[in-house]
Image (cartoon, rainbow, N blue to C red):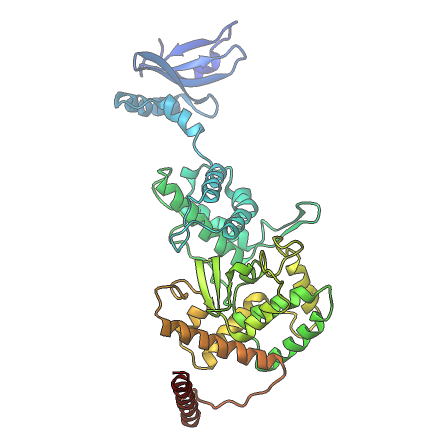
Length: 446
């Protein structure tokens, strides 16, 4: 068995079968000469009573000396009980990012992936996640092995999405279309999702570290748009016109409720009659972004909700067809109502933000505003005592009443301070007068 050299390898002849030439310097290291003339370096070793072979690489790419050094490393690992052939087989089967994403989505749809609040991710959130996975993560990283992803790869992914590398405009179904633009916001949210997927992978024992942790993301655009008092007047006139048009009447009614409650779009579009509680003046939402949530509802909001209510309310308050059909046309109707108007730039979130901002202008605290909006940790629940529920309902009455008045064309001249002494004195006088009248009514009844 001669020592393998380049000259020897180049001169090795072929036969009608594969031949092996073993090196006399490193036992177990050799050259395989295929019938086709191809030559490759390999090692041969015993593992668990079996003889195994592991191919190092092809001659030409590998020189004899390079292959000999690699053979020494591999044979040393064999001496320590490691099987290079098995390691290579497992590496070939290593989970890809696409496979990890598919597993993540399957578990999320089964309720096994939890959101920030500790409960299972909502279907709407899962749909959003799936869109980012299909449109950004899989196209750029899907073929890569999970264990090979490094922070530098995540940074490159961030730049590629931000620069619009995944931008696409494709038809998805008979009347559907996916328009993906990318950009800094999409990049930041996609990296956030990728980090969540790798956290899931750590919990499942697939990887040991999260390559997305610590990645600096572009700051998402802060949405500060709110309606002015004058714009509320414009909104009111526009909705009144659209409510008189049968094709947009339902959408206009939903928009009015959104403005008067500060609720999220899907909370009102999917509102059920069973969730409308007139006696407690609230909306007992069975499933919101934060889970079950009870929102105080002002009288003006309830007036709109109950307008033309059926004799036996059941199903959805604003159905798209039958009483149980979601009004899927709402986004298109929204566009039809506002396109070409002075309010063309507003979104349902603008109405929610405007409700909160106006509540703050009227002097309500952040905790009260959070409870009216149903923020996590701030929604009304049965653990609240009656006086707090009443305070929140009165707050909702005040804000919705003020918005209703603005939308009806009223103009208010408010004191520059929420703590104006004359206004407070007048409020105390009204409160005491009411208390006296209530006591008189009770005495007369007795």
